[in-house]
Length: 107
Image 1: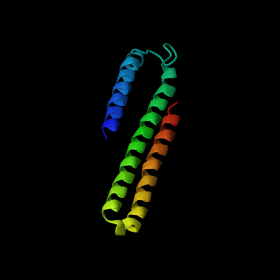
Image 2: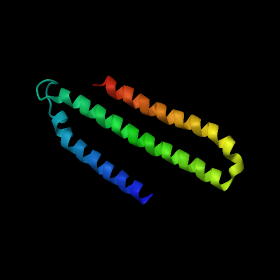
Image 3: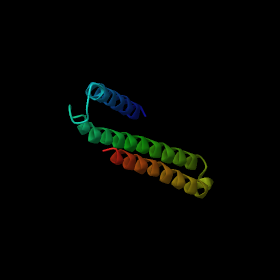
């Protein structure tokens, strides 16, 4: 758990530093083609997809971990927990795919 928290902190700081480095270019752009700000679309799409995948992976990991922990405490509910967990996993994955489609539509 400590390793996951360290990874989350480091990735948050990396994203914040990247946004701080790119934001002035987009803020002072007069035209889309004048300063090359149109080239920031693929960078933003890549960041959005990356953050969606990281969030989806963390969410799926927590969902599976909680299901396995409850199954370990009470093995008789294993069949009852599998279907809701799979539905939740599908919903989490659909949000990641939606982020992918939205990010690609803005490039």
